[in-house]
Structure formats: C-alpha cells, structure tokens
Length: 99
Image 1 (cartoon, rainbow, N blue to C red):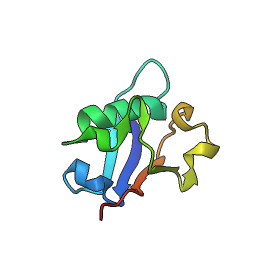
Image 2: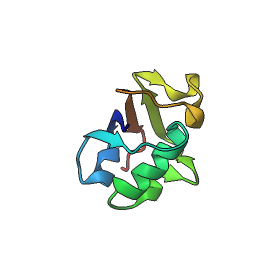
Image 3: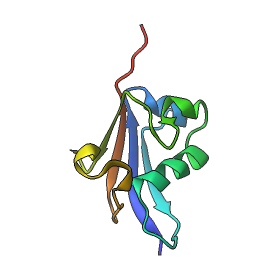
C-alpha cells in the first residue's frame, strides 16, 4: 500500500519545484519503512526541476534549510532516520536569502 504524505516548500525552496509550494504525495510501497533519508532521494529524483543542490547536499538537506515534521523540528525526531507515517506533513523552509 502506498504512503500518503504532504510535502511543502517555502522561503524560496518552492522555486526548485516549479514554484509549487504544496505537494500531496503517494509514495510507492517499499520493503523498508520510508524515512526522511529515502524521501530526500525521491524528492530529488521526482519533484525538483532544477538546481537540487540548493536543497540537498550529499544525502541530507543543505545548511540553511529548516525541516519540520508535523510542525515539529526534525532535529527532535531523529532527522534523516525519522520513519514517515500516513498523513505526515513535511515542510522544507529555506532561510537563505540573496541580497
């Protein structure tokens, strides 16, 4: 069974995804539980249209990107190892602003 979650981008991060802020996703079933680590790879391969390095650095989010899981800081939830659950809301907020 697929896993339904919502992913949102703001603070400029939405520009990487065709300027669409909210994405209702149905992640395909996989052998292991979905974690944010695997979600980042999926986002890079399926949602980001240009310059993925502005969101993802190596296998994690780049410095300056705030990640919230159901409105809580992902640092409190295990970061990359957080196991996604049905109807989770993951928000990526860029705190990097040019000027």
